[in-house]
Image (tube, rainbow, N blue to C red; front, side, top):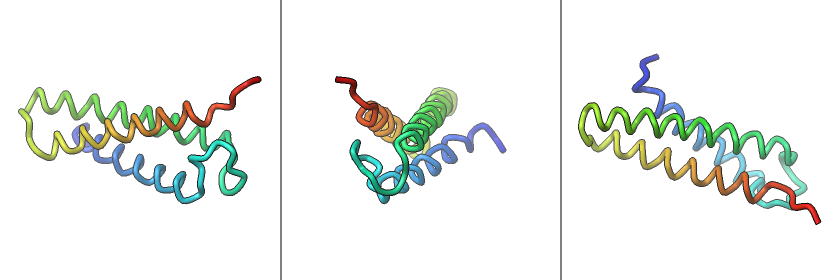
Length: 97
């Protein structure tokens, strides 16, 4: 696999994880159906790190090759998914007290 294909892979896996979490109502902190809390936290953390890596690689490619549409689109998609998973991870974290 070429390193330039990684952002597309990260975007696809991130979209798959987002679909799974949203379909099982995993975005709700007090959800009792579907996935356990620890699995939802693990999925959001893994997808966040994966999409941040995809964002970094795609931004490097933008600086190397110029602002091509597909590079900017995948960078924007990875940024949006990384922010979604960051927000989801913060919202799912159980509050004490």
